[in-house]
Amino acid sequence: CVIYAPTDVAGPLPSIVALVAALAGIVQIASQYSAADVEAYLAEFNQAYQFLTQPDLQELEDREEEQ
Image (cartoon, rainbow, N blue to C red):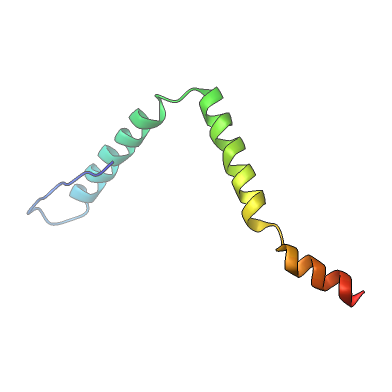
């Protein structure tokens, strides 16, 4: 979600208005997903994270040889 809010007004008000608009857009996007969708995405993320953070096979073999 990209919100472009050009303004020539000085002060923090334009930034606050843009922030509120951005948060409202994010809420609209997030509200279209059900709890089951979120759980499925979380399960897929965890599976990918576990795969990417596991030690390499070569590293495991090197540790076994050292022992």
